Amino acid sequence: MGEDQLLTRRQFLGLASAVGGGALLGSCRPDSPREAITGAIMGQSHRLGHRLVQGGFPPPKRTIETGVVIVGGGIAGLSAGWKLDRSGFKDFLILELESRFGGNSRWGQNEFTRYPWAAHYIPFPTAESAAVSELLGDLGVETGRGPDGKPRYDERFVCFAPQERLFIHGRWQEGIFPRLGATADDIGQLKAFDKAMAGYRRMKDARGRRAFALPMHLSSRRDDLLALDRLSMADWLKAQGLTSPRLRWYVDYACRDDFGTIVEETSAWAGIHYYASRGEGADDQVLTWPEGNGYVVDRLAGRLKTRLRADALVFDVEETSSGVQADCWDPAAGESVRVRAKAAIVCVPMVVARRVVARLRREDPPWIKAFSYAPWLVANLTVEDPPEGKGFPTAWDNVIYDSEGLGYVVATHQGLERWRRETVWTYYHPLAKGDASQLRKAALERPWGEWRDIVLKDLSRAHPGVARHVRRLDVMVLGHAMVKPAVGFMWGPERLASLKPLGRVFLAHSDLSGFSLFEEAQYHGVLAAQRALSALGRSFTPSV
Image (tube, rainbow, N blue to C red; front, side):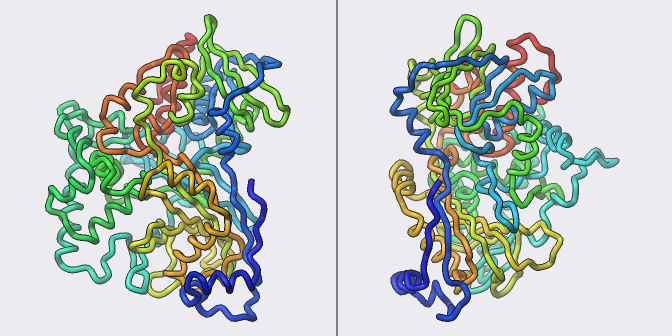
């Protein structure tokens, strides 16, 4: 956890001069009431996690017995616990490295609102993502079914209008595609792209499987569709004659937004999946909360709280003659603890699993090195008298054209008040261009002040003088935020090899799908829980 940093007025004026004061400060006056901006670098506990590389943990001093041990408390781990609990199996523990659960769905809170630290919405579930519907029903988000069999949702959680806007040519427009100033050819190519995506959305194979489904495991295996994985999304656009720079930016934005990768490096199968796997028309909506998907984390953690253990760094998971044992480091007590169980569900990224799971550590299978990760920067800004800007009014998602950042979402958007004096903007910036390992290293070493400057400079393009409105700016660097769906990875031998069972150690993470989506994390967590129940001879009703 970083120490609070204070930016004085004199320092701020010096910063403004260095980066171009007019753009950053706007109409800020010397007698402005905003004297300072505070903030901190918030943790992931990457330094503690890096101890896995160093090793040297002492032998366990005490032992805990449980039926199933779950390593990792993100959506996959919590979903595994939810499925075990829902099946009447209560004898399990979830061990999490961080002090708070949630992984990429963690959340924060200040005196005004809750806010997300990463994942901030769930698309309306499709027919294939039945386990998501089951979970949302348990949480009261899905309230029932209509005469047509379609789910109904608590209206407080369906994203309010306006949902999206884009800043371009000095003003805001509705929607993300850059229509303002677009040529007839740009619009024609957008229509051709939308038609192609609609065709993929409706396409089914001879077995009735959708071409692109959520979870992706239920997608068609037709050869012509799988061949898309051998192309980049940029090459697919070019092959279709879709050369509009605006369309390319629009698709590149989607790849950076969902995958943390640029269009030249993204598998065309993954890029098309982004558009073709979800609903259409009225079903193409999302569920969201002030804290984003932290709402689901909070509700699940409340149900499972007696079986959650935070600040537990698991450094060894080994299959034994009677089951498994998981050794973990308790930094508060300064000692190692052994957890004995009948089965283990390991819900961590493969970059961590290769060091934690003893069998993977010994064998070092070649497939595991194919998993690469995108680093991200996320910032939460406490904003007073939030500026709206020219043109279309403030939306839930606010994007800046031709920016390396992705813009910001407004945490208080779902509130019933028409205007609020204070809010939180969650700003997203995937570090997508360049060597990921170098970007990751530089990001973790960069001080808070530099991140503050980067965020404010980008936002000032759409909101000149935005710094006058910012009371606090916290940042979080997610070094291994999400697995990259690189060309050839989605249906290549490496990812498929990762799905093979490891005895009574069950891997469960969205990595196994090739991209970091809520539906994928939940699918693998639930599937692993079902496999663990089968291994223990326990009956259950399948959810996936």
